[in-house]
Length: 310
Image (tube, rainbow, N blue to C red; front, side, top):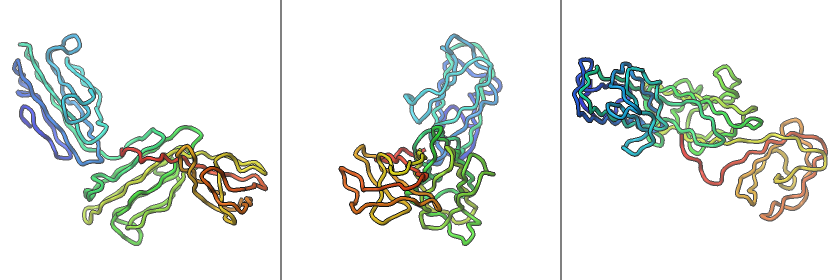
C-alpha cells in the first residue's frame, strides 16, 4: 500500500488512508495524484469506507477532483460508511485529498484504480485518439468507443492521421469500425498500415469503434474527427439550399458555406439523377444543379475548427 499521499503513474494500483484498517489519526492531510497514459481515463473504486460522518462531510472526508490540482472540478466529497459509486475521470488525471480533524477513530478508506480507454461518447462532434497519441500507443490495449449523435442524424468520421502496424489482413494491431452500437453491427472497415482510411458515414446516429494492439510493434496510432450528418431527400428540380456540384461531375463533392461550415454531399450509388450546369461554385453562389428524379443526399456538417480530443 502507498503511504500518506503520492504520485501514482502505473496503469492500475491501490491506496488507502494511513493506518487502514486499524484507524487513522486526527489532523491528517494526504494527497494522491493519479496520472495514466494520455488518451485514457481513470476508473476509481472505493473498496472500504469508514470515516467520521458530519454535515456536508465538513470534518473527516476524502475529496476527488477531476484533474491534477486542488481547483480542478469536484467529482465528490465523501465520509461516513457508505461506499461511493465508481468514479470515472474525463481525462487521464485524478486528484484525491484526505483530511481528518476529529478524534473519532474509524477504519479509514481503501480504493483501487485502473486506466481505461474508449467509452460511450454522446455529443455531436469531437475527436477520437488512440491512447498516448501522437506518441506510440502501448502494447496489449483494447479500446472500444460507442459514438452517439443527435437523433435523425448520422455519424461522419474523417481521419486526421493514421499509423498502425501494417499487416495484410490487419491481424495484429487494427482499428475496426462498425455501423451501429455493438460488435455485431455491420462492419464498415478494419484498418491498419500508414494510409488514412476514406471518410466513413454511418446509416444511423451511432458508430462503434474498436482499437486493438498486440504485445510487439507499437506506432503513433490515429486521430479522427467525428461529427453529425443529415440525410434528406431532394425533390425533382431542386437540389436544396447549401448543396453544390461541379460541372459534369456526379458522386461526391465538398463546398464551404458562408457560415463557415464545410458541407459534403453525395448521391448514393445506383440513384444518380443530377444534372449540373456550367458554372463552378463561387463563394457567393452555388453551381447550377437540377435534380430530375428523387435522390437521397447525405450532408455532413464539419466544424471549421478542430474539436477537442476525448
